[in-house]
Length: 283
Image 1: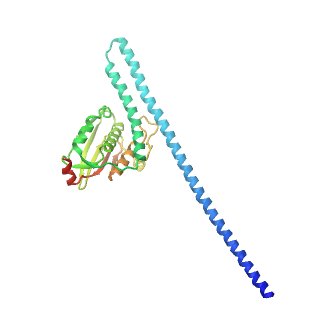
Image 2: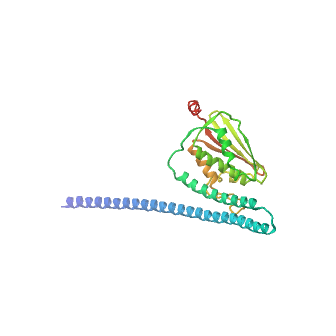
Image 3: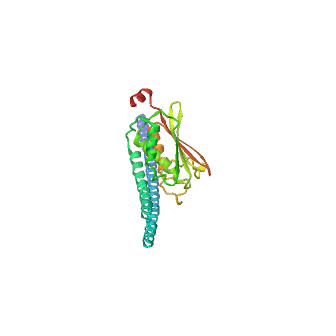
């Protein structure tokens, strides 16, 4: 009986210890689950805060852009009325300025919508051989509303080379780079477009004589909604460069930037050359 009692007591101790171990293991698992869930909720909350901040900035920028455009239109309407009373024929000029303000506002919305479409799209770019020089000449000819206050110089050094590109996405990228170059340059300053070449790459470089970019901002200029001076007079939402970089990514290319404060900036979008077989087929 004594031996049986000792054996039974030993089994009870083992069972109790096993129960304690199971309880401790369950507590550890529960603590880990709570910690992981807390981290997930914290991450989701932070993302919501970031998203809310972005939309608040977007709302402020939209309001700012509307005020600018409406201010231009109102001032031109006022001048139009005064000139009409005095018999001064300036109607065409005033209408042109008001149309430019409307175009800038429309372009801002188009950029925002296209940016979201590109960001949310899961499809790859439709890459086809594209003769870069004639394509750029044709594109630049239709951008007078973007470059109306600046002279644009085009240097197509790479005459016969072709790139693999999605023409619609490439157009979006180049127009954004050109628009940025004009926005951050004083009226009357020239903007230069160059074709550049490396062994397997062709580049479209947009060179301005603007204010330049501070070194501490270089890592942030490609972030969505980032602006160096959000409350400044320069229009925009901080989406253009993020969009251009994403277009470069879809092409398997890259976007390089060089800048000197007070002298200007150079952005170069590098794309892969078309293979010779594709090149000959495209001709």
